Image (cartoon, rainbow, N blue to C red):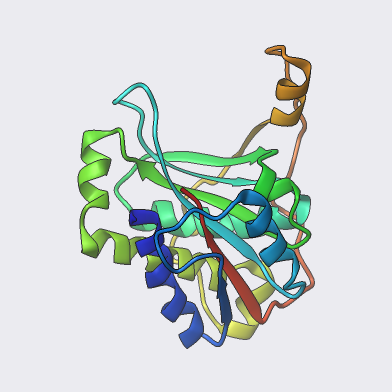
Amino acid sequence: MMTLDVSLRLKPLLEKAGYKVVMTRDTDVFVPLGTRVAIANSNPNAIFVCIHFNSATRSGANGIETYFYSTESAPLAASIHSALVGGAPSENRGVRRRGYFVLRRTTVPAVLVECGFLTNPTEAQYAQSNTYRQQLAQEIARGILNRPALAARTGYTNRSSYVDVGLQPFLDQRFVRESGTKHHRRHKTSTKKKSSSTEKKKVSSEEQ
């Protein structure tokens, strides 16, 4: 419910800024991954933002991390992540490239945002707060509006630009699953590429 709550708080913030927001769900029901991708791909002039809270077997694991797959998605991931870590008290775990289904199957810029670890006592307490979830929604909205391709049109500036948002090595999870081994490929990526599109639609997605 907390991920859905952040998404529902994000929706009016983006609508106020002129976006059309298409939710993959607005009630606490499970939506298959393929359906989420189909919704995103049916809106070609859009971006896809998947909102998560993380978990781990180790309670000490903490922090915010943001994932992308395609090169076109890197600026969006960097912008959202920079805003989030600049406005939240959690550790900056970086921007990472991963082959998650909802990221590699979408045909529009797509990111997956991990807003903290519910298995960490401190971050779980943060997530229980309505005020904190509203803050997360506001920072995600700020990151979307401040994406390089949109900055000139919206007039927004990134107050969190001082945060170091470094890309980390790419673990191709498709290769790991298909081969049954622990080996993986590494690629270099860059957030410097700018997108020339200016989206007027926004697909806000939330996963369980």
